[in-house]
Image 1 (cartoon, rainbow, N blue to C red):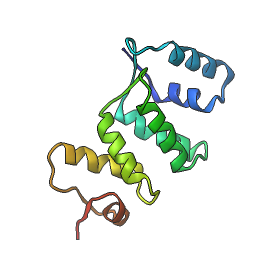
Image 2 (image 1 turned 90 degrees about the vertical axis):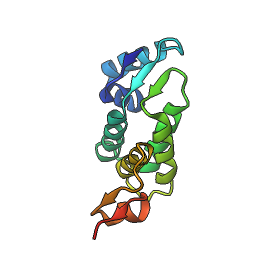
Image 3 (image 1 turned 90 degrees about the horizontal axis):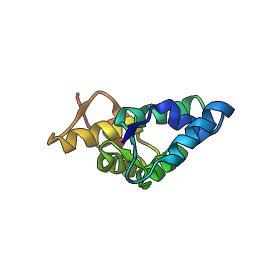
Image 4 (image 1 turned 30 degrees about the vertical axis):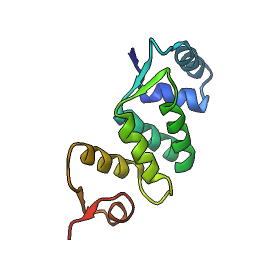
Length: 131
């Protein structure tokens, strides 16, 4: 197993740099179910942020890419079950993906609720507003 930094995934998905994209593609396509690429939850959040803020992809486009990564035998996403559940909550596009991941990670750790000052997170990501 090898770890994959966010920038490798960005180059693979966006194919925007001839040299780096070719290297990222060769690396990722060389992975197998016996020699997987590992993607941390931090990289999932960073990937979402980079692709939406720097490349102009919609949240739904990034969510589709993340779902494809979760279904690929050659890639292992840290806490994949939490990421998948967060993507389901995120699905309607009203919630922020990071908020959904925070709430799902807290719930998986046994938290009965996740408190926030963020009104949007309380409405759409399942958190409770601290008033």
